[in-house]
Length: 187
Ligand SMILES: N=c1c2ncn([C@@H]3O[C@H](COP(=O)(O)OP(=O)(O)OP(=O)(O)O)[C@@H](O)[C@H]3O)c2ncn1[C@@H]1O[C@H](COP(=O)(O)O)[C@@H](O)[C@H]1O
Image (cartoon, rainbow, N blue to C red):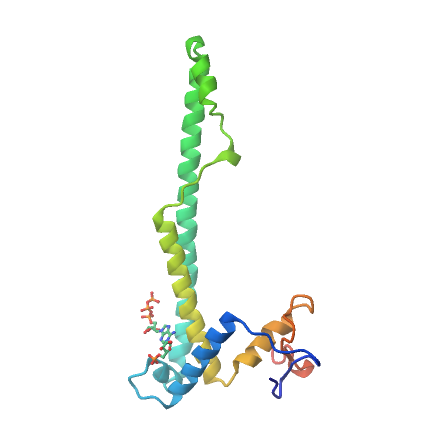
């Protein structure tokens, strides 16, 4: 596996992976749609004005950001609810301790405020927000892959871009890299 811009290190074999197989299948489907009819959304993105798919990438990236903010909001409100509960509990405990008759009850409650002990319950909406984030992330990747196909950047070449940014220790064995003359060219 090597073309004009990329190469596999000598003596190493290209690795296999799930996401690799998935992206390869999707890239092949997208490439096939060059010859499809107008009923294919992918074909319309490949054959129509480039602005359509370029706008879509920006729009879907924005939706990823909004979906992530939604995840943040559910996490923050869940933490706030847990803090409010702990604070109320600690206040009740402190008030009880001031009344001699209640000292025992207060000790039993053992409810001093301790942020490390917060029991944060994430609601079902948090999980749904994570599902939504993953969905929007897939929309970005699909549209980005249509852009790559449109401009003739193969998956191997794209992998080489990412691999080139890794240190030798981080890079998978056998990973392709950009030939030096293509690194950061045109940046
Ligand atoms: N992976 C995708 C894929 N992801 C997203 N999309 C389309 O991208 C469009 C996104 O448009 P919208 O902005 O309306 O997004 P939405 O998801 O409806 O809603 P939001 O993002 O606004 O929340 C929808 O029409 C989706 O169907 C995709 N269209 C096609 N594919 C793949 O490409 C293959 C070929 O598709 P066709 O070209 O339709 O044959 C399919 O079999 C799939 O494997």
